[in-house]
Image 1: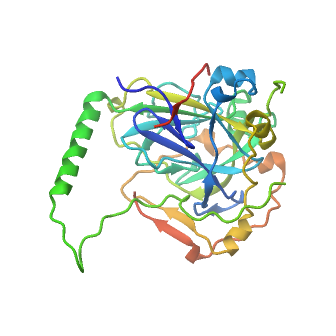
Image 2: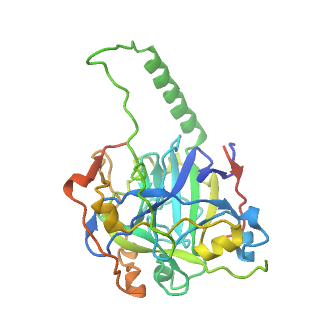
Length: 352
């Protein structure tokens, strides 16, 4: 059996089986229409709950995991770049599966599929809610009914994000590793040619976050309960959630690792950690006016998962919080970039 501990490496969560997950800040999309992939504006800082046992709520200590600061109605996406081996990853929002809309489970399922396949799935920007589209992850407080959890289950108990990884069964994983070693040896044995017309090594496709972040706008003792946050949905974007082309029996029965990600309002982040939260997100119209890129990603060899009725029915956070008055300026066609196919400290787990 391999290492079962989740580790935090900088702002990257590393789950067993070579799974890497980063949480990326991004522009919030309008809730009407379908849009290209928004750009990344840097990583959310991630901290271990166990390092702040004296200042986090007791329920957070019991659940363990990590935490990150997020503003009201701030949008995020999950990047899986750096994942090194085939893995199945479950993503929960308030313990509702972001892919199937079903309750959280410690087992993989296929009908409907309740996981994404790595490294085939390069990122996930929201819940699987339409054919070839997702609805953007947007942070909202618990208690309003605006979260995916509240709309699907009728309760808001958990909040946050839950991650759980599954590895290939050992014989299949060893076979995959052997094939990778053989390919690497063949590549080293290939003659290297220089000069005009020489084959150039292919670089990995840039993730939406791999762009310069514009200057962000300035931000507008005793334990006590923190204002809990969860994820609702915002605007729709063009993104496929890929269907697994392996038999379900290829994957292990039990998860290799799991982690609970708590979402913290900026004032609570400062109180808990003593750190200043990141500045509030940049104005999206200013970003677009500056000519910075948006993204489109398409994999012609992959099959998109059909959305479930449960997730299609989730309403945007604007239905609870009111209209979005931030001005919207659509990117020009030239700003949309078409992308092709493409160690740390252990994190304490708990009861959840």
